[in-house]
Picture (cartoon, helix red, strand yellow):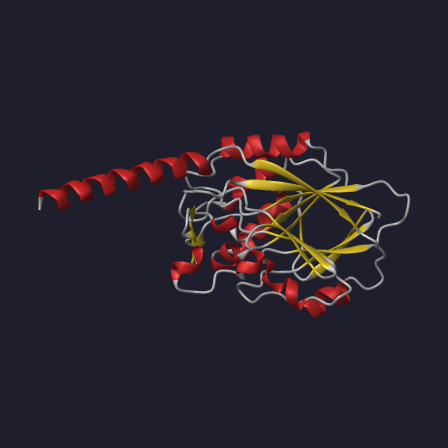
Length: 277
């Protein structure tokens, strides 16, 4: 019995240690990752076009408070992107219960600076809670919110597809919205799973949602697929996925969802440089 009690005590200490480590990692400054994509759809000889990809802010819990979001915005601005895109999940919550006030996002996100502005799409947590209030707050912050709509930004045509995880995506309507726009089509969306359903003419996808697994343990891997329901296609777990004719960039996100813990999956954002081959 003593051995069992001793073992239980050690396991409890180990668990508390992992939780503490995970909270520290979740509140750390996100890693800035970079990738260059040679895109034949860009005009030859034109300058590169840099897009900052952010996602999964999940504002309001211990992993994302105002001071941390302010520091992240300052880091993104310092990178001087041509365009900022935010791929959903601005808040936490589900079943109509929102865990933070969307208006608290206005002041920090209004400080984002890019010559071609800021574009956002909504994520599953946004749709589970109060998408109208979230969309209104983002609009007040000067952010263009796209829901199965397209927008021209420099040499890119941004296809803002709504969240596939909650079945709000409409690829056909988004493509219709892009008719008459000239430029490289780039999908911005929350869940990367829809990449395999896109037509061959759309070769670039920027997404979030996965948190890069959020809790990734040695030998076990990510705990996300063990929750008993579809979370995401593990082919699109994290980073740069180069499928035939298509490049998908998946950020691990800035926040940490409903549980403010990250282990083995650091928060990050991407600076994606599109250039002519």
